[in-house]
Image 1 (cartoon, rainbow, N blue to C red):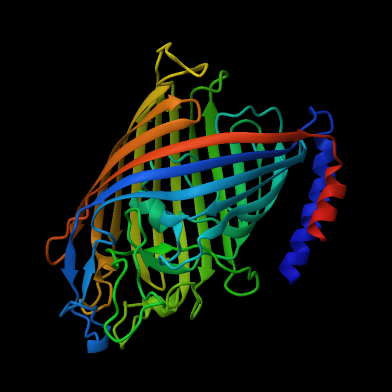
Image 2: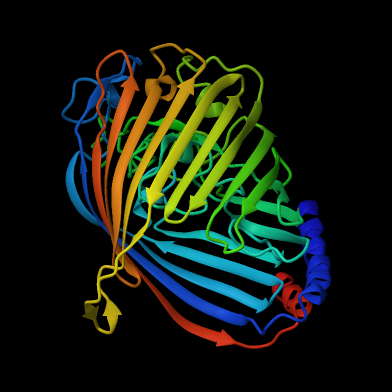
Length: 462
C-alpha cells in the first residue's frame, strides 16, 4: 500500500511539472484505438528425451510406460494466436498511456495452456517525454512511468514472431513497475526501475509454452493435451500487484549517437537488476510454484541452489544504418547461486519495394525484410540428471532465419525457421517452421484539450 501511495503522489507531482514543461506543444490526440490479428501455420519437429526422475506410476501419461520431455505440439497446425485491442491515451503532450488487451493469446499463455485467454498485456501511464533511439532530442527531459509495461532494456521492435533464447529467458514479459528516466543532452540517458519482479519458472523456447504441472490434469495416468516441451528457466509474467515483498530494483545508463536525419545511429545501454527470490510464488495453471520452489525441485531432487539472490546485469547495442538494423544483448544471471550467461544478436535488412501495382488504392508488396538471429544460453552449473526438467541446465544454441514481406499497408507475412543445437546426453532436435499473417488497423481517434494533472488525479483516484 505504501508503494502505491508513493507512486501516486510522485505521478501527480510529475504530471504538474511536466505539463507545464510541454504547454506549448500542439494539441494531443486524446484517444486512439488500434488493433492487431495474428494467424499462423506452424510445424514442429517431434522429439523426445527420456526423464530419469522417479515419477510415481499414477503420473505416467495414458498410453505410455515412461515419462518424456517432448515437443509441445508436434506436427502441423493452423491457428489464430492473438487478437489485440490497443488504446493509446494522450490527454496532453507530457502524458501518454497505453492499454493492450490480448484475446486468445495462445503463444503467451503463462505458464501453461490453461492460463487466461483474455490478458491485459500492457496498462501504463507515462508523465514526461522519453526520446527513444532515432528520435529528436531538443533539450533535457525527464519522465516517470507507472503500470504494467516492458522492461527498459527489452528489444524495442519484434521483427519475427519467434523469440531467441535470451529474449525468452530474461525479458519476454512485461512487469508491474514504477520506472523513471531522463536524458542529459542528446547523447547520455538513464533509467531506474522499482518493480514486482517476474517470477522464475520454465517454458519451451519455441512458439507454444507447453504444459508443466498443468493443474487440470486428471490423475491417475493423465491424458496430455500438450507436452512439456524442452523448457528453459525464464522470467514468467507477473500476475499480482505486490510492491512489499521481494521488490526488484533496476538501473541503467546509455549512450547514443544519431545522425541529423535520424536515420542512422548507434545506441549502447548497460543495465543491472537485483531482488530476493520468494520461497514460493503461486502461478495460474500449474501446481508447481515459482522462484525457489521451482529451483528446489521435487522429491528431494533439485538444482544446486545457494541463498536467494536474483541478479542480472548486461548490455545492449543497437545499430541502424540505412536499411540495416542490428540489435545485440548480453546478460549474466545468478539465480540463488545458479550462474548462466546469455547472448543474442539479430540483424535485418529492410528493402522498400518500388512496385506500383495498386490494391484498393494502396501499393502492393511494400517492403522485403530478411532477418537472421543467433542466441545462446551457457549454464555455469551442473545438476543431477534426475531433476524433473534436465533441459533447464543444458547448454543451448538457437538459429533463426526469416523473411517478412509487406503485402499492403497494415498487412504483412513472416516466414521463419528455427534450428536448435542442444548439448544433452542424447540427441534432441527441436526445429520449428512458423508462417505468420499479421493484420493491423488504426480506428477511432478523438482529439481534445485537457489538463493532465487534473485528469491524472481523477483517473488514478477512481
